Image (cartoon, rainbow, N blue to C red; front, side, top):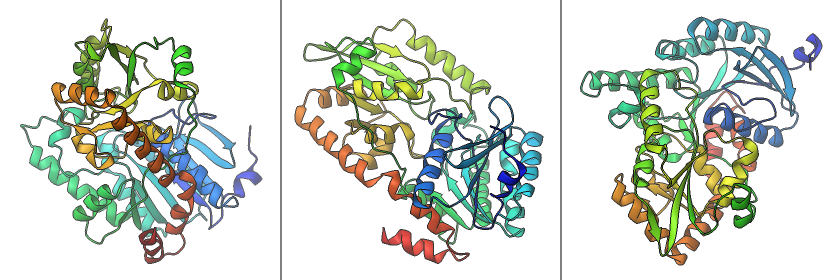
Length: 420
């Protein structure tokens, strides 16, 4: 649908909200990575809280540059992940909406390009601040020590790790200076950011979700051609080192039995799109695929489209999150909560659940057996998901985001958030 100049000009007003982020493909939600999915869900929540608010998204180009309206949100796909293809088209688009004062930035490392492109972002945001823009940055990853992320980022932790850590802290401080407010998706991450950056700018709006209705387990298993005589453990999301994809694969190298039932792993995810072209990630993914290949204990699905997510969560007896480190809120975990599924987590994510395990094959296997074999434990974990599902409903969060832009003073938003 081609929009007229008059239609576009209707969005160029001071009370509009301009968003810079990756964004899912049209008519989808779970494409383009976790940042894209979260941004779309957040904007839908904001639209529900204030249906008259004009929202413009300056998004990444997927197939070709395009402009369209989707659910009342103006989406302009205008930039790509490289220095010249990001900053120049982004600036051109911003100039077309010069009356808009409020900018919401979804930030995730590698979302906007390579190290150099990302490194210049705080400088660019500082210029926008000087131009009178009010910037709220949603920081999806907060980490001050790269030791546990060395493999994920491709850094040699025996060389210059201290230098990288110092640069990372300096980067977050500059990002904090350029932003009027920082939002993280968990309170622990806000506390971590405020330790790094003076001024207590970070506040938490817990990772939201839209409660989902699961389908009957055996029906879901039938749709996926799964043998209902087995037990199924789901590990969902893009495959990566920091998420422990290799750890859960190693845990299922040997058969796992609970009583007389075989336990099979559903590894539901493909390559990380923002990491996919990097040499160290290609090496990790290649080795991981070798470990998966021809393993009868593992079902690897590759990327799961929106239309099949419900079936996989509904078919699972238990969901597992073997993350090596806690640096960001987990979209797949939010889906587990949305579907009210029982889940267990690694020790770095122990704040989510009392059912946690160590980062070893034996610990993972023992935790799976102990959980799946005890009905009372499974019931308690299901109740935990049900409680969290009500608390984290996206429909409660649109107003929290709007409050961040209610005034050019940060205190009203901070006061509102403190009362929640």
